[in-house]
Length: 262
Image (cartoon, rainbow, N blue to C red):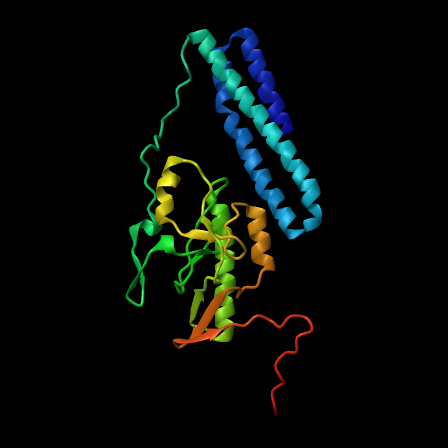
């Protein structure tokens, strides 16, 4: 990646010295190659950090280096655009432009939910582990990242949902419902100032101030939280319609239940 970024910079500097518009356009078009290398390295290093925490320090340094190299490519692209304008007096035009003004977020694709004939209003609910709604049984949703790839969070959600379903199958549960703890502090689910997000906040579920009710918008923290937290934390399970509350394990020094009699 470093060699590609260095070649990218050298080519654009040569194009500037020679006022070569075509060479500048070639550099402008090649920026995607650097971005692809960065994205691939980003995913690979994240995998290493999650699988072996001892690599976090070295991998984090490599990520900073890779990001700086990616920025070198961006600066080269900016210079290429300047060369084109300097020689032709025109800006490099994009193939197409997508405007997002007036975008309206529609949760669940507009599907209305109800539980036992009672309408579910998402704004009244807390989001559980970024994938379920408080008081809504057996419903999993994919709520992605605003600062990274949406599919990264979808992968985390799929793994966590599979863990809950396996837990239910092993114990014979048919229904799983997140239960909001009493007195938990509520916060907006997204801290984002964009207009379309601000317009959507009154219709989106909220998040809590502690796990498993927090949506941290951080892939590493999400993966660690999913792996280290109890699969049944703040969940209520039932068999055949009879609620079965899964109790927490007794604290250290607290006597547990008496052993069963033969």
